[in-house]
Length: 134
Image (cartoon, rainbow, N blue to C red; front, side, top):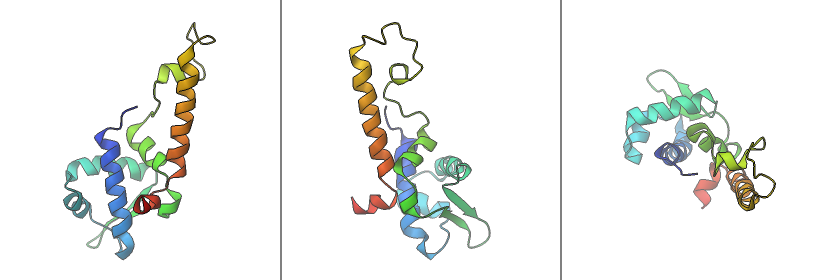
């Protein structure tokens, strides 16, 4: 598992949205400028986040984006899975329906499975709001 710019920039943008949307919707160009990110790239990320109902878009002259639910209810795991897709350390080895011929005697499978469970637990226990407290 390697975090791409989609995940990193998405977390940065969501954090900025969280701290800036207390006064209402935040235009994407404001987030892009504040975080020194491409507005076009953020549009792609926010499209995916909107589709999964983590954020909402507000149209009009005072439009922009807001969180779809409280920051305490949005986990880091949710954000990363939307933007990164499969977050497995090594998909072939950790799949439950694995067809590997060495599945019973494989020394790495148990280790990777335990690591994956720990990573998932941490990602799902941290909320967007927690980013301000770290």
